[in-house]
Image (cartoon, rainbow, N blue to C red):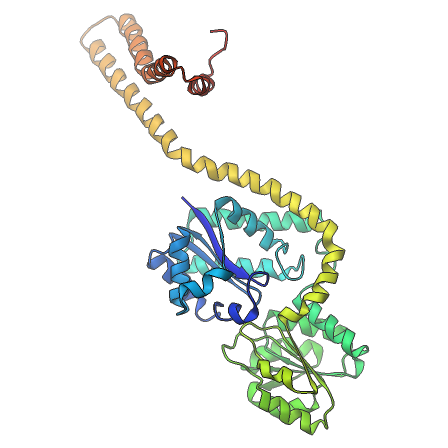
Length: 416
């Protein structure tokens, strides 16, 4: 069996490529079911976040890349330069590092573990996960728990949401006079709202496609709630916009923002788009009084956070290495399990045949002691025949390596 991971992330591909290969939440269940049904992989888990799209599979990489290109209706040659392909050993290590936040834009961010768990849950519900991937991801979760327990990589509340608020604080200074519009009502926006509420912003408004979900998270912040259609009415009164939805199309266009800026009499507006695909049209950044940042623009703040976590990350990397070696030992043992099973079956067949022959002789009245003696001799000869022939052939060929391996396997004393 071949473990394989195919993917791209913020380090290998720009946002313009990542958004074309992202899996929206509504299509993810069908996608992970389809990859198995079309025999591109025997098992599959698809992890799709704002910074990465990764397919963890039991199967061949060429089949998986072909399916990925077909699913997104893209030429395979257009996406291959941005993809990384990992073999079994690398896949295990990568899965452990991703779940611990060691491969995240914000080093050690905790949200990725929940996203990995959700990816496994989705794949399991679609029947795309069996023994091997389930074993890998269960081990992945325990590695992440160990890293959180034994290192300080999660000591600071650092996440993409935290970085977005940090950027706003650096630009505005005091956020207590800032009016905020949050677009979306998912986990990221919920974290952003919590951070902003802690900064005592002047006013918060949450815009979402459905009011019920927005009301569920906005109540504790004393924030207003509106629908996406009402954004043009409130936008002119907003100083800071942070958006993170799963919309396949932009929520804010250049024209809408331009009209809002005119009503603000050219008072600047900060817009932070942490969605993939993007929620805010790229052209908004061309407006003189609009300051637009995407997830890729958060890298400088991320770098500062990474410096504070480097020591904890080194400790975490050692844990990952130790756990990877242990899991690889188990994984390698799978290749020998079939041979072990066959060898045991072969020995048991010989045992049953010789036992049956001995019982027949006793039933025919032969001396039991003689029959048992003959049984032991015949059973011994049958069981040692194949190893004995292998030793003879290795000796005749002068194959010292084979002799050594056979001696170790049969636990032969060198003096003999």
